[in-house]
Image (tube, rainbow, N blue to C red):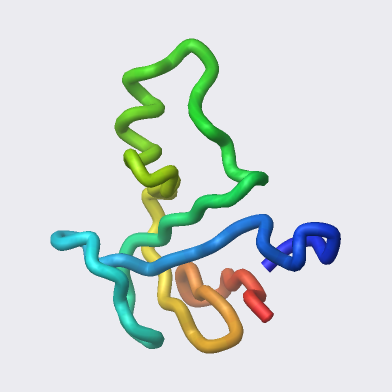
Length: 84
């Protein structure tokens, strides 16, 4: 999803298992993580918070639960991110 100037690849989303961090298939609820050039690389002058939030592969762990469908990611009953 994203700007056409970046071939729509500003942000990549994944839903991962809460306990194992494995990527979950469509329709399963799990942790929402994201990465890309438009996602922060860290917190200014807060290295401890950065390490807790962004893993060694650059994935930002949002703290939200979500469900990835084929066309959107749903967070709660009424919020979704269009991923087409």
